[in-house]
Length: 152
Image 1 (tube, rainbow, N blue to C red):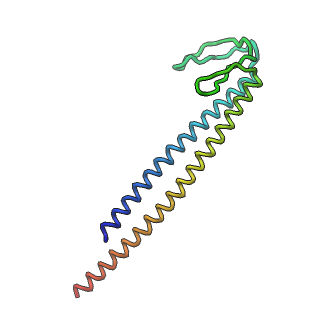
Image 2 (cartoon, rainbow, N blue to C red):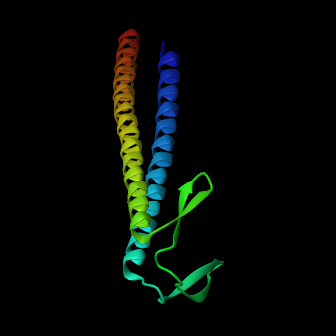
Image 3 (cartoon, rainbow, N blue to C red):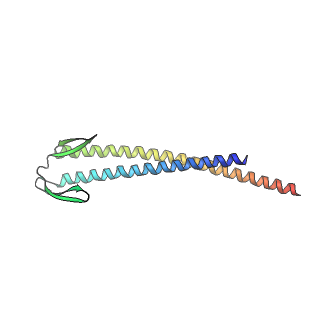
């Protein structure tokens, strides 16, 4: 009887651990999506504040930048996903970026929903584990009482 309870408890704690890991993974996904949104906001802001002839710092990678002059603020190349990009006017570029940002909002909401589901599943399993521990403690108490009764 005792062995079975211990085994079930161990199984529950393994399931809980797996759920926690999954939640952590999803939370880091949310962070990545939010970073992407921040970058989009910065791009939208830049498009609004730049004009033809503005000097900008262009990242070359590895923390190196070069100064460049904007030749035409109405020729903005926007990534469309799947390695495709299109040249767009400033207004269209802002619109495309806002659409991307809204899509990210939806994805964040979906991931947060998944997190909430996993958290409630985790709560249920924790309650089960507590109940099992209490039952096992009661059984141990009863066994100890029986044993002390046998000794008399």
